[in-house]
Length: 111
Image 1 (cartoon, one colour):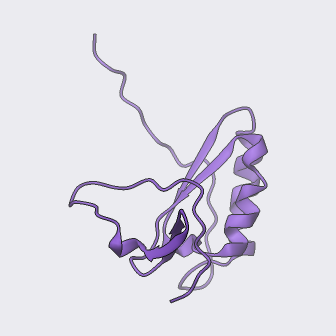
Image 2: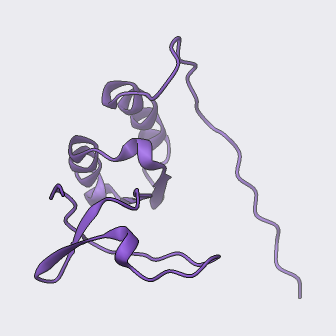
């Protein structure tokens, strides 16, 4: 029996009038309608380094009770706390073609 082919289709987007990264307000304006539209489903938001903000992460955590979870890509220089001490993500051993999932990490320390 063959597996069904899964497809991802854009369901909502917004054109920005400026170049560069979007800010929290602009991102919330896109995410809120999507979260509302899909509120009966579990949502996992996968985001790029642009989402590396304590305020964004805090805002997204408020939606976890509505089955909205998120995974954020981090820079190699990001400090994460695993256990009692902080380390840079570059110190975590990951081979080419692999990825590493770190759950519930603190990432607020600076170098």
